[in-house]
Image (cartoon, rainbow, N blue to C red):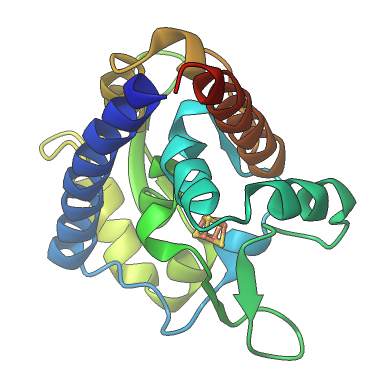
Length: 195
Ligand code: SF4
């Protein structure tokens, strides 16, 4: 259990650095998120590794709600992330209910770099930002050859160095959270015999 906690602590530090990097890039390029927008959290394709969800799983365990959250995740059938708290009728506005523990993928939502088939640098950009700030997006895309954006793959690789096994597979965020909770609960169960 202590090993999981140590890994999660290291990941939290790395996550803060990642958030800072992507947020600075968005600010520098004027690619601002719409205030209160929660569309990313409604996207059905958000994926994370079990490792990315480990800090949240430990937090839920420490709060005594690991089992109940696991049950709720298994029953959750609404579109989007279980932890998203919608504040508008169409659910497009809202906030993250676990913001300090959100995984790295959520810190890269707005604008991030990736490599195309020919190895060229491309920009992954949120569709809301693209429609709200078209000029800034075009200027950023034109600058890609001279100014490399933060690259998702590099940060994923940095995270994987903390625990290759727990990071080797990406899966829907709900599934990754459930797997992280199961891991924590199993470790805690066996650790209780060693006390
Ligand atoms: S963890 Fe938070 S930021 Fe990430 S998808 Fe869920 S609600 Fe959104």
